[in-house]
Amino acid sequence: MKYHIWTAGCQMNVADSQRVGSELEKLGYRYTDSYREADVVVLNTCVVRQSAEDKAVGFLWSLKPLKETRPDKVLALMGCMVGVKGGGQLAKAFPHVDVFMPPSEPGPLVDFLLARESEQTALAYRHRLQDEEISLVLPQHQRHHVITAHVPIIYGCNHVCTFCIIPSRRGRERSRSVGEIAAEIRSLVAQGVREVTLLGQIVDRYGYDIPDGPRLPQLLAALHEINGLHRIRFLTSHPNYMSDELLDTVASLRKVCEHIEVPNQAGDDNILREMKRDYSMADYYRLIERIRARMPEVSIATDIIVGFPGESEAQFQRTLDSLAELKLDVCHVAMYSPRPGTVSSKILLDDVPAAEKKRRLDAVNELQEQIVADINATLLGRTVEVLVEEKNKGRWKGRTRTNKLVFFEDESGRDWQGQLAHVEITWTGPWSLRGTLPGQKPLIATDEPLLIPLMA
Image (cartoon, rainbow, N blue to C red; front, side, top):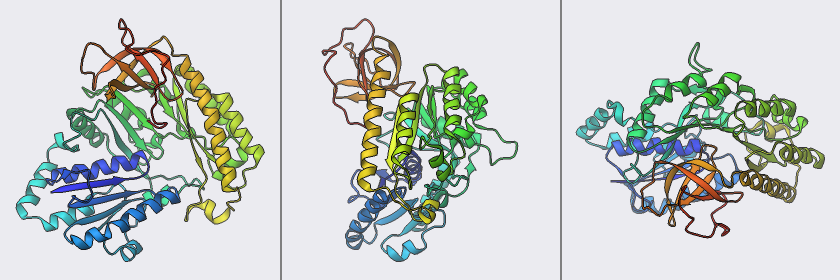
């Protein structure tokens, strides 16, 4: 029996798909790249932008002929398109879909499949659930080959940013227990994972929904003790919850990487108020100062939305000016897209033309490319620690503690996958670095550009 999972959207969706795959592996299914060959096909959807939803709907309809040819093929729809309220109207719109699954909830699919299996198979599955060491099972082709993994620690969101549809689709905040998170990470480490990224819509609010419960600093300290785990990251943060205690914890724990993702979304205070972000740009500047005071070589990532309703040219220029002054390592930029059900879609007019949004997006990307090129250039000639993920076109590929992508060669033939390498940087660009192991000469000219995808 085979399964295929199609995933769109954020890292949380990737983690949700991993959880579904784990449950299917426990049931005896094996992963296939071909949705045509699969006995179970899961579509894990995103609706943050209309284009993502349209893509999911198109793929869903393309599966209908397959379902008609093979009625026993199980089709499951999951994620933000379904939302926390379940299938509802979707079941009427897509009658060829067998199972509708809210975000992060593989249970409906498991129950549907178990109802079709023998009592013996169901019993074997439940026995596997009692084994803590396999709390999360990677697909066979990933075991001891996947070095990094995403682990959700808090689901949902209690904030209502006016542009965001996530709270209505993923529900209110729900923190997982420290024991459950630790057991999952131990099982991943046993399968070869060496780095985990802890996930939450606002990850800093971990534990806020548990009276007198542990918060993110205490969780990081507990996970730091897991043997075999090399690195810990977390995202995404909110400026209002990046406490001094959290920053001190990140600075003091060796396994926690000096990489902070803390979106500000816009550089103008009036736009921030319209977004209901509950901080000013002065607050954000002070936060960046606090982060850099504790970790001078930290890398900081932000998110920016251009073309928010009512955003004038002057307001957009303030965003550009703030990016030029702050000089952050990463800027994820998106054009505003009104989503049904959000506050902004109800009360604000989407009045910035599409062409102008695109111009502003391009302007941010152009500025950011130069900023990152300048930041990365400071690493030339330095030796950095790289967690090696895989071999790519004859070069080893990995990332620094500050999430910089690095390629290097090793003439010794050593297998570096999953290992920490100290690499001397011999070439820098805005999207990657290249280097060699100390004492080894580069195998290629150091001024030769390395062509890789923008989002590698």
